[in-house]
Image 1 (cartoon, rainbow over the protein chains, first blue to last red):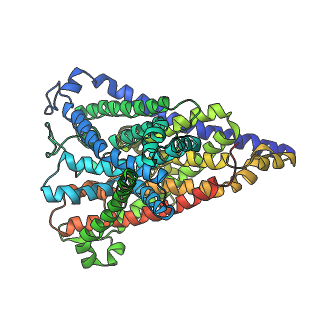
Image 2 (image 1 turned 90 degrees about the vertical axis):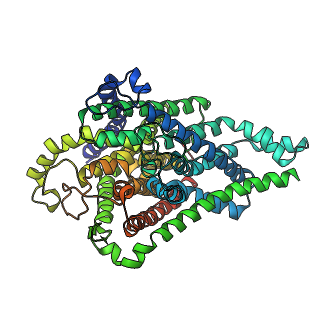
Image 3 (image 1 turned 135 degrees about the vertical axis):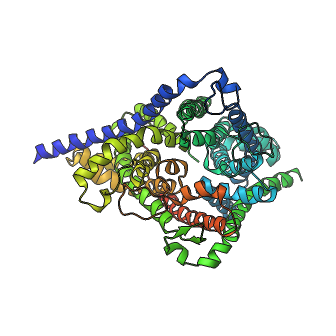
Length: 279
Length: 301
């Protein structure tokens, strides 16, 4: 009986280890596959040239890289200030009931599938402007970014010790002066981390861009359809040509390098021993 | 005076969040109006999806969304719970923290990359080896009959499983770590083995949090778009066999919305979006309630 119990113990505990190894291995499989298939297609042209028709060589995806930067940049300009201020409200000006509603709404918005956010941006901008535009894509991404930044800002502001606030108030600072000069700087590391992680997350989004920013073989302005790296990967990977698939792997490698760099950077900004709260 | 302005400014931006959600619900309701008026509740039960004759029914997509998510959960719950137990109960805290960081990186990988890998590595693998194997061994079951094309419910479910595991692990691990140390010590002192302690004492104690993590993973699986779109086959039909290609709500919107002409077609797709919106809100709500309930009580190891 005891032998059997000990046997079960060893088997089950080993299985939990197997589960962990299997999961962690997935990351390395993904990275390995992207490097094996994608690295050979990376070249100077890849970053500086426009896509070329099938059959020609030397094409790149500069338009998608710049397009992504533009769409995500504008999204950050819209989303970060709104999310930041809403986070300050939740952490510092808590009117218990209303704040609970806002917090609930932020979590709800955070859980809405990104394709549905795409429908919202389509209804608000693509329909009135009669066509896809980079701006519509930016609005979609900023709607995703706002709740992330709100919750992260709130969480890190809450970690600022009460004594700091009391000290500022005791010195005669008004409340907003206390928030602006004491609380926010004290929580700035964490808030920065939250913003970086949020931007990295929306930068990889494809679904909300499909029918908002759309796609473009050439450069796109704010009001034109604009290619982005994730949509480019989707188009190339689901297309019929081997050359496209090669390009898709390379673009995937570039995208994942950006996302992982942002995540590791965020981790490094935070002091050792502080865990990253999830939004 | 300055204080009041600052307060009102912050309040204003908090209200922006509420306005966004109100606007989202309004647009979904308003723009799906034409389809809702024409098909009524029958929309949810009909499996006819024909843009040419303008007959729209949500069943094939609803079915695909539910089936792929269930397959995903069936695979990711044991895998995620196992890994969470290892990370919370067995691994030294330092190792546990660094492995958890790696797992959180997995959650940060864009879904189009999962889709890319699935198309070029998982689909051929399924087509050449796994699906023929399933047909010869389990082919007597209705779930494993039909064509072995590589794309389909099973492949999509598998990708979703891989994508949801990180969420299940990191929330379950937190829930397990929140179980008071005394619970473990008491069980061990009574002579229980490490596994018995974990399975009969610690896991039941953390069950709400674990359930919450499962619902969180489920909500993500239901709404996941790109990875499913790229491997599910995009066939608007209902098949019992998991090997058949199918579609899902999110995949249908991603595939067809850009080209949907007329007024009824986009309206029907937006009604699909409305259904998905309702589904994820309910599941996410459950998840949040359960996670809040557990992480509040215990103390971390």
